[in-house]
Image (tube, rainbow, N blue to C red; front, side, top):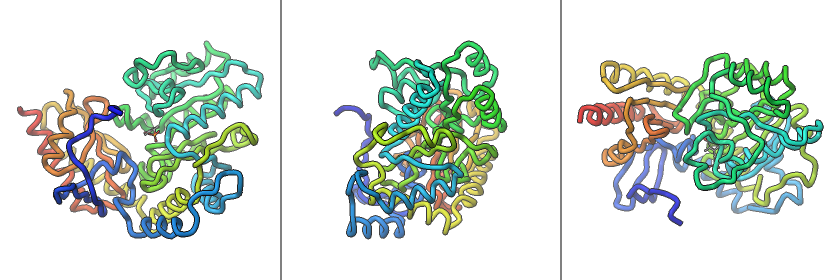
Length: 386
Ligand SMILES: *Cc1c(COP(=O)(O)O)cnc(C)c1O
């Protein structure tokens, strides 16, 4: 179907941060399949784990115990401090699980029209519930009627949420991204999650974090909430979890971990041995190669270098980010930069119309990062001066 405005390139091979098209041209990848391929392309250990699992057992269904799924759940709960996990195949599905969990939790507490607070400029996916939760008219337009049971507040604004709390007795949860990726690489105040945690405690709401983009190392920690010394009730994951193999997860803690009972929720493919083997190995490689520290240092290095080179460039609003998500906001629309970068054999992204977004693989080396920054800066300067 005509759902994508695709760029005119076909990639046929990948290795590390490099991609090759069908004419043999090589490209530097600062997009990582939109925050998916954290280990770069075809990391030998990931490829081996996938091949071995494919030769052993691919799928059985959740009618039975699945050893690899249990091991992955153990590892994710160990890394996050959460209690248990539900597995699915995408970010939207992980958020669907969280939304259903919050609604069921509300019903269990006698709230018949449970309501979830969601944020302006948020992105949670393209299913009906998750596009309703998303704070972006473009993803909603034409798909009305939207779902009921969501109220919206500005991101990074505690007063607005407190007002919602005062006016709505049906709120059961807050669903929020620790940083907004699609919404323009928006990094909230340092105490934002702590204050949200406090407000959720006061009102008996679940704090549900959409870490589909921010989780699994992207922020420089396993989970972005670990920058804030808080514990959420629900965390959703997908993008980077399988290193490129489709997998999503909804983690829960405490009372939230006890909400679903057999029959409440399910997925045919969710947590299959192949996807779980890929995720287990992805987590192992991140730990073994100390990629969290590397992501932190490399992200800081790239932001510093961008700020240096763009310091006196009129039309550059801000360089920001956390770990290996980097945003460069311009004063003008700059979507066309993606195509211009591709002509220079560099993959970047523009989101929210004016924000150049870089999502390098965690294995990117410093000289490669220098190339990304230098090409990006020359593109920005050319673009703003023309
Ligand atoms: C990408 C993304 C989603 C949707 O994930 P899909 O796998 O495309 O369904 C949800 N939330 C956030 C924060 C995302 O970045």
